[in-house]
Image 1 (cartoon, rainbow, N blue to C red):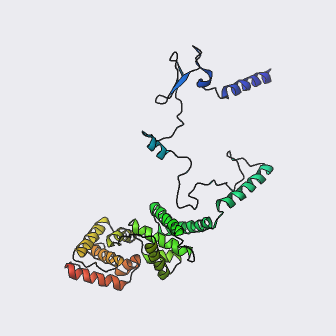
Image 2: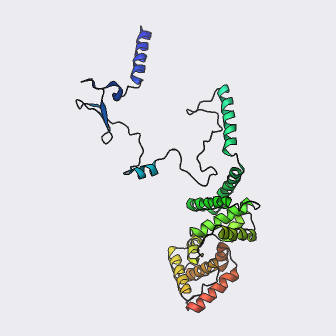
Image 3: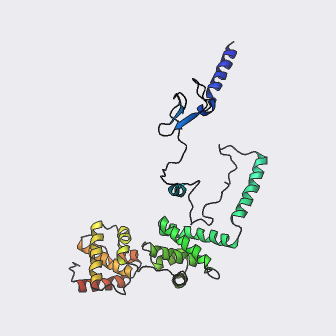
Length: 324
């Protein structure tokens, strides 16, 4: 008797857990009308005949964005992950995971596992099926490595990937090193986006000598018809100051020194990293956060002689008072 009661109770629980049919399919229980409407603002399902609320708190499964015109709706509509130029196929292909488990985490049956293995193998083959795809796959992997080591922001990384794709369209990669072209694209993107990175830094992390890197960079400028702005010493000040643990007061004073030197045409023809290093050295002394020339030269990747020469020139031309 107890077993029959327990069985009846379990069956009732199973019936309660069964998904209920939607009100749109069963119609209105009062008037029997099958025509119902949904109110997305209130989350309700309403009978169009008698006005009875058939269901409330309906979950909105639509997008989280709003569009007021058809053009805006077409522009915002999306599915899956966003497109990215830093992936050789722009992230539009499907990836079959190497783990033999389904969506619930359960292991696949042996027969299904063999089928998934064959699908995964052909998916990899079709994803990289041409020489350009293989070139892009290797180049984007190298781009990830360089930008990660240099702590380059994602927008600059995207710009470098676009430049490399343009270089492939112009057939500039043929006969040249992929690593050298990628490194030159990263340097060009940093210059275009005003993110200060020197040629020596990129050459150090890309394992390409500076001469070859400069040659590829000039080739990109000539063939892609780019107008790259001149690097400014002020752009290097925040990064150098952060590495030297200097305050914002020192950074502000260093920028003022650079602007005063530029007004007197002292910065013309000078390396911007050396100017930034010398201005930080002067500002650190004036603001009481002294750093040695050796420390600043190591961060700026210049010699101590360069820091000393730029420092003496600025003090002499600007008549600065520096307590050595």
